[in-house]
Length: 81
Image 1 (cartoon, rainbow, N blue to C red):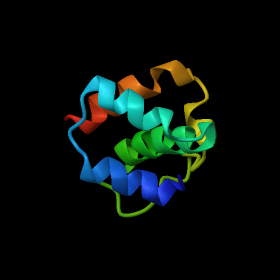
Image 2: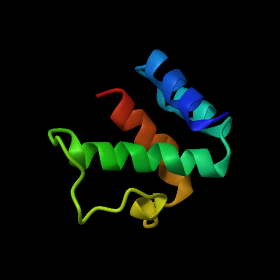
Image 3: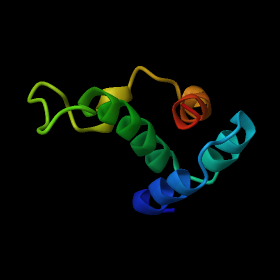
Image 4: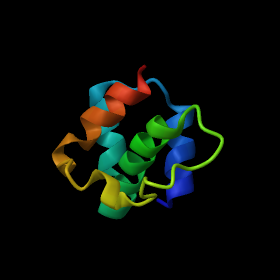
């Protein structure tokens, strides 16, 4: 599933249970999973900004410290807030 489809699916199915988040993430390629998690964190850091911070990478490198096994939990927590 392309990233834009994944984002639209995520937005249209909110809020998700942990099981639903796990199922959703399981349908995505590892690359798209990383893009979703990076978008969550980059978006969080820029939520009240009008421009991108110059010192922040707009990359999946931003989330290198997060193990893939935690992705569904992150989607669940951020999507249900």
